[in-house]
Image (tube, rainbow, N blue to C red):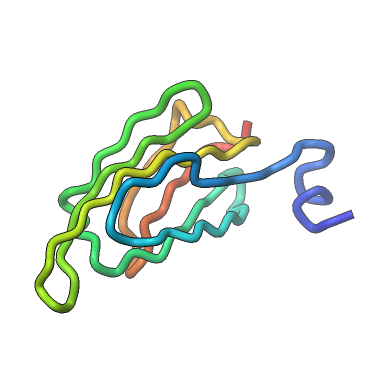
Length: 106
């Protein structure tokens, strides 16, 4: 039995990027912090002031933009699906170099 299964009991936590349209590759990691599922995606070039998101039927749709080191612009348009969390109460923010989605376990 894995650590997540021990922490969550029979609940299964999985995550994936369902659709991706953008200039960077986001490889999500999923962890548990207290009663929250936390999805982190390394995205240092993203400008925190451009982050928008909405939720729908288990998905978090995330949009943001930024500037690469060479000055070229980039945009991301991602749909992230995480089972085991309440996406209707998701929070999205930039923390350091990461885009972070937090949602209550549910």
